[in-house]
Image (cartoon, rainbow, N blue to C red):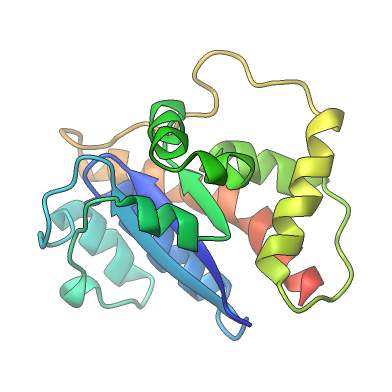
Length: 183
């Protein structure tokens, strides 16, 4: 069974595509699909040049990437929705209320996955990771202020994009470990 992870940011040009490509690398060989979309995306645009450069440095080819606008069916089809910010998380749950319990900010899910009990091997490793992270919610204090938000590097320097990519990787490592333990 394939499980889907959906990354969501504003324009689907920087944060969510970088997360999509990084997650594909980290989850290679697992029965997991990965995609991205933007709450305010214009369909069909190439990845931001700085994000594309950073993605290419990891061995991926971002040339075929094209942005897509978030639709309710993207949310209802995904087993796990990871957003760049709390605002985007709210938009996602407003578009598809049924996705509420499986929609997190990327940084929030990373913290939860880091303290979650690894699930046993199951048919749906992403669903098992979501359930394990949900159980871990009671063991963590809520983040303060905008600590759950992944800052948008648009308008910044290549170093700003690199810092954003590093934050994405830090948040994704516990997710990959948790999914790996489940299947």
